[in-house]
Length: 169
Image (cartoon, rainbow, N blue to C red; front, side, top):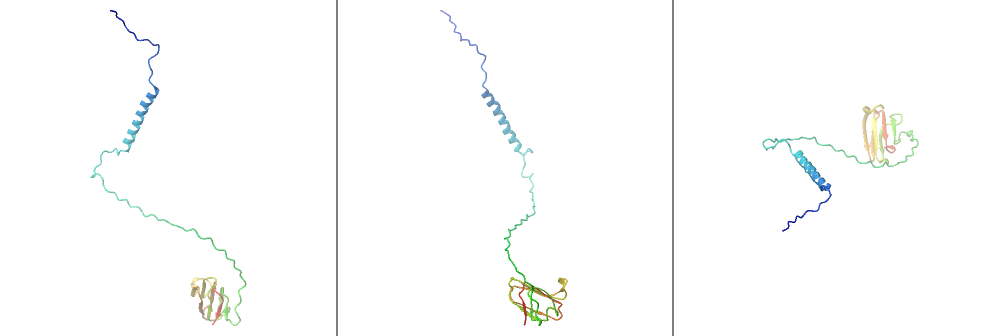
């Protein structure tokens, strides 16, 4: 009988190196797992379990918020106005031009005057005890239609703005 020994062929290579890919997978997986665990731990309350008895209701009062809305203004309409010298009152005091402040007894005679509906859309008139402020208004009115006023001898001035000419009745 022969004893025959089989031998493995010898190679001159060094021991096999581990694949770099396997190393990356191993350490990369470990890092990702640690990251996920860190996030999970950070999102927990950290103070232990809380029971319903530990929690107390909290009421928060916030002031109401004020919201302001502004609408864009429509562009202004261009209006051309040609002004001429105001006609003087007639010698007999039977009319008053539409706009101005007139002295009673000099520019305007006492009496009842009427003005047609204003072309401007608004007629303002005032009977005045003086010419230096709001405290001097005896009577006044705004009108978009026909206006009627009685100027008295005790009035000092009569003011008219945006009105058509006044005619004495």
